[in-house]
Length: 113
Image 1 (tube, rainbow, N blue to C red):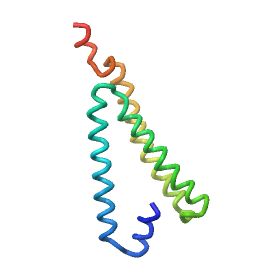
Image 2: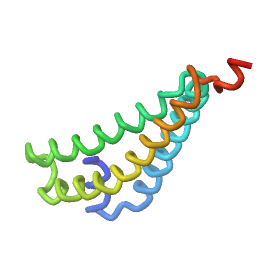
Image 3: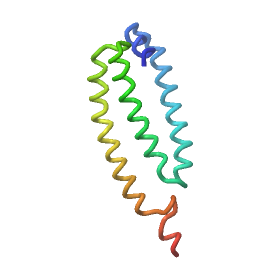
Image 4: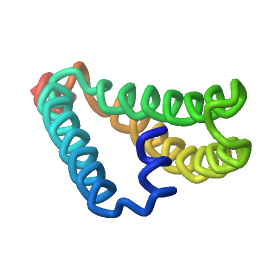
């Protein structure tokens, strides 16, 4: 986060684009691998989403509190947390609905037929 902040301050747009592409690729590959395993276990995707939410909200707040980031990052992290929290809530509701429909990743109708 500090590297990105420095690049934005220095207007190093090429570096920002490279970091953005690497970040997106890392998330895509991680989600792809987790998605393959999630077909069988059914809860890894939500756990990953929840963990990422907690880390991405907590880290900027802690860094701003100890003085490594400007104070306005706390407000940005909290506003990001509100909107991301809405998506996380929707994911939780869908997770709970799907959890009732299957047994360890298998559809109940397939198991009991």
